[in-house]
Length: 295
Image (cartoon, rainbow, N blue to C red; front, side, top):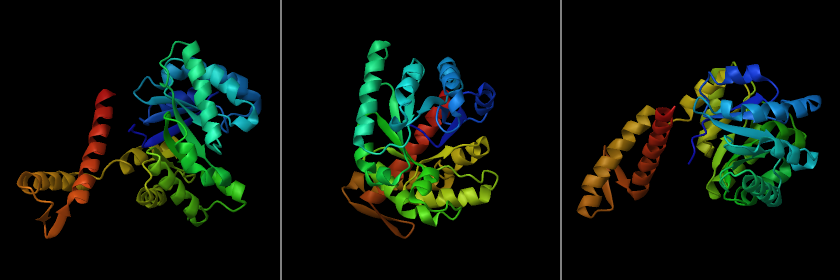
């Protein structure tokens, strides 16, 4: 899977913010055409995003564009302006059902063919941020092979539910947990909601720990102050990597090689699921190291 520990959003009409964002080493830079751009600036933002797609990916980050939802009637103009060489993917806002995704898939293929891009090369990340979006999360995530990730949009979700957004996030628990399950079932990456108190790193670390236990693998970030923490917190813990290496070694040497299904290690039983978990940790670490090596 792609490495998406940190997805940093930048206003599409602000070149200075983009220049600053590139210094923070986010895994993904998302040039925004939606909420970070006022209505009067939409046309200008499309042009600026078109001119800066390759620049956004110049330091090794993937360059994505967040487009307005289909219900705004702005999506086609956003796509027409931005699907060009250098674009890694489209972030679709307020994805409500599978047909929203299939419609985007179809339009992307049409633009890829028209512009000489490899068909299927532009990926999709869904922003699931409404009650109906949560209900249909699995169907939306599974609607197209282009979908590689889905984000839980807590701010719009709580507004849609007519409840207060809190740092404790109790009001988000069901939707947050369900979306992570839906993403996993569809074999896509679950990306957690933005954390608005960007100066409170201890609170952020606690929130990330809770989300990771639900299955989240990365974060939507609206302030660069959280990029470093995200890259660190969504990487395998060095202690876990050391444990995983030991588990793989002992299981392969003492179980697989000798025709056994389980062995004892440090007074604990190690069977196939434990071994596979260790392999997953080492695979994630290898993918991150490969990404850093390519920067």
